[in-house]
Amino acid sequence: MIDLKRKFSRKYSPEPRDIYVTVPNLISLLRIISIPIIAALVSHHHMIEALAVLALSAVSDGVDGILARLLDQVSKVGQILDPIADRLLILCSVLALGIAGIIPWWMIIIVGLRDLLMGIEVLWLAQHDYGPLPVNFVGKAGTAMLMISITALIFCDIWTNPMVDLLHLAALAAGIWGIGLYWLAGYIYLRQGLRLICDDRDVRRNER
Image (cartoon, rainbow, N blue to C red; front, side, top):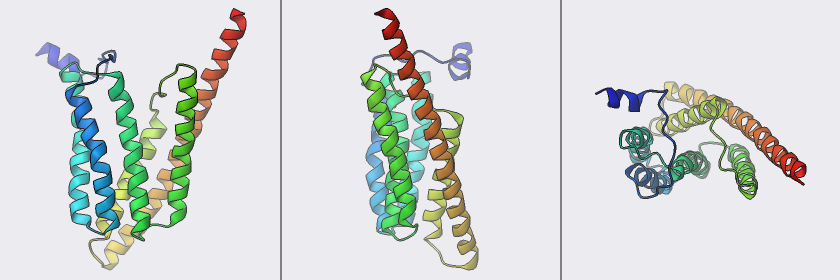
């Protein structure tokens, strides 16, 4: 019982290991596979089915983290798959909403540019033997705001009435705020990455 409490304690953070075939990683992989299904359903206005798959995806996002600690299967691959799944879900969902004519295309372009910039930074850091940067609070807040907005916009497409129209406007406003936080987090990640690379160059220069 004490060991179980320790596994779920916030202070307990097991070191990630070089393991690949784990239950949490399988769940994360299934979550990634579900993303194009959600996007296809949204783009064809099958919103009830899209919400059902999205709900399962959201549940799996929490389950894989719990199982990783419970089964002592925290892995480096899992730490990479989780943020990739979040970014793909947001990008594909926003793209699907644009195809469905629910949001303007400028929102898709802004989200896409941010993810492209972060992808370039990850590759750049990899050249210096650095892995993905740890997720910060602003990034989590931006992701949460965008997911709330996406879910609400999907929900609003099911019915047509004045209250739903107001919810649609609120969801768009939440999406704009979410994009702002998303870009702010990207700026923070970019500064952290540049600092790491500059420090790495200074160390190499001093070793010569």
